[in-house]
Length: 42
Image 1 (cartoon, helix red, strand yellow):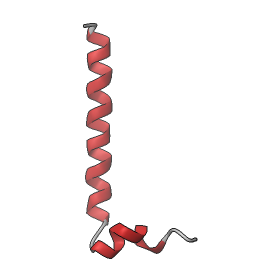
Image 2 (tube, helix red, strand yellow; image 1 turned 90 degrees about the horizontal axis):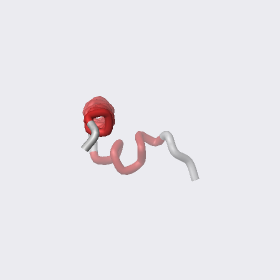
Image 3 (cartoon, helix red, strand yellow; image 1 turned 60 degrees about the vertical axis):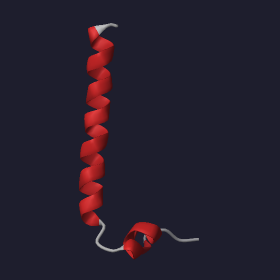
């Protein structure tokens, strides 16, 4: 495989994990998780 493709893939995976980590720290209760903290309306 091409080294550029592997590098870009790893960058995307790492960025996704970092975003998920910080988003998970903001969620304190299951209610926050399931209702998006009340930020979504019908």
